[in-house]
Length: 221
Image 1 (tube, rainbow, N blue to C red):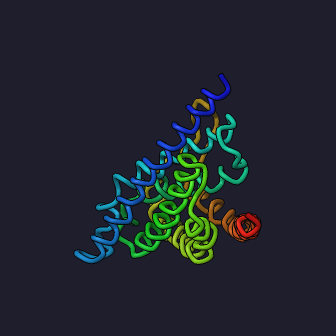
Image 2 (image 1 turned 180 degrees about the vertical axis):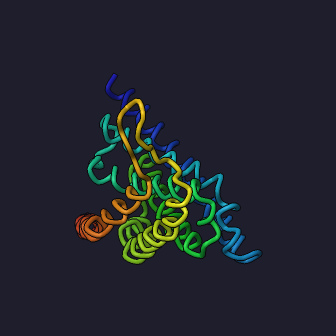
Image 3 (image 1 turned 90 degrees about the vertical axis):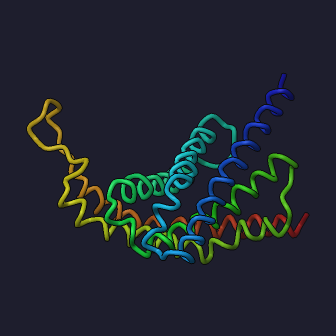
């Protein structure tokens, strides 16, 4: 029974990783094609559907950690996926005024290359029990450049969206109301920007430690 459960787990995670991999390949394809043919102003519209699919599918990774399907700590997975979902749905999708900015291109290129490498790495691991050494190196090295470019784009897009957030009052809850509760999405965006200040260096140091551990292990093997 344990063997059957293990097989089901591997089949599910293999399918999950390769399906989301295909989603991010589509994102990168549409971004590069659109940049070449019509410019950065149209990148979001071209890549929107696969972006929403691939990024929203990442919610399952939080569940994978919670139920023990994977060993990744939820404490590391949650902030990464939470910030991505906030940018995807809470900024880009919610405020179309941000969609034509050049930072959308740098954001999606950084995200898609990172995720194409990551999902193919785990897809190989689940399907075959190993990943090629070159893919291991890419998995734990490309973030050195792509994480700063991605984070810079995220922060920039939140900042760009703030005037539109304030003017629209979208997602705000005003008093009085039945719940006797108020919420201002503009101030929530300020808090989000504040979290990036200590959160980004902390996550970068965490990934550096993971890189050292993973590459050292691969050398021993």
